[in-house]
Amino acid sequence: MTTVPAFRARKGAGPPLVVLTAYDAATTAWGEAAGVDALLVGDSLGMVVLGYASTLPVTMDEMLHHARAVGRRRKDALLVADLPWLSYHLGPRDAIVNAARFVREAGADAVKLEGGAKRLEVVRALVDAEIPVMGHLGLTPQSVLAMGGYKVQGRGGEQADALAADARALAGAGVFSLVLEGVPAGLAARITSDVPVPTIGIGAGRHCDGQVLVWHDILGFEAPGHRRPKFVRAYAELERDAATAIEQFCSDVRAGSFPSSAETYHMTDRMAEALGLYGATGVGEPELTQ
Ligand code: KIV
Image (cartoon, rainbow, N blue to C red; front, side, top):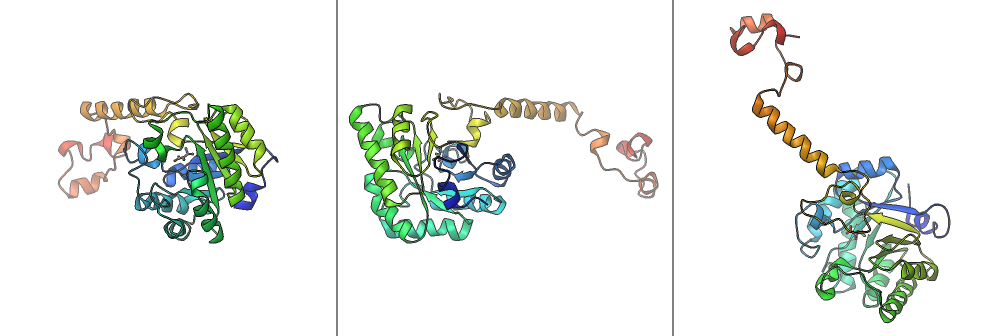
């Protein structure tokens, strides 16, 4: 079982950490079978599962519904749950109450929250309440309105310095790990060498201590019309295969070729005869009684 201290101890030791999102029992089982180090119940849930246009509408109840499913199936991987927008912005008390629900109801090992300097009080309060925190800096999707869209962050010198300062401050406040999203590789490398905790990159180049991607992205299972971001590598094309499979099912049903005899439960000839069904609509016919 991967614990928070074990995850943190991978800073500078061993192969890069692998983190994958999970939203239900099946995505959890596949991540576990592949041996990921951590499963993240991300608030990307809102976009890839619940059909929202951003992560902003996602509620604690929606997150918990999915985190509990992941918690039931999780065996070895570290389980991190994302605090959704407004579940920690109103102050430390709210943050602790909401984070504790992930621990108690879903068996989460840690929570993740977005933001730098302005979140330090909340991070310290959670850590004081014995709830491990993963930070998240750079392109933070819950700030989409303030950022004016999903834009790479930290390209200019001043912004890069501010992000590097945020990363050091979060580490000082006690985060055990830090997601860096949508920042230039050089900045991610600088932060990675600056902080004593593992950095986990997404669209942040290869110099981080680990990488995280969204399940639907690596499997090519995006919603129709979704533009695949540059930083995603799709290892399968499930969207295409799923569409072909469902079209084939529709045409087989409409053509009467599904279900076949082999896909059908049959009664014995004697039973069919006793019920007066022998020969009716094909029931009990020799071909169908195997
Ligand atoms: O919500 C999410 O899935 C995330 C990861 C992509 C880092 O925050």
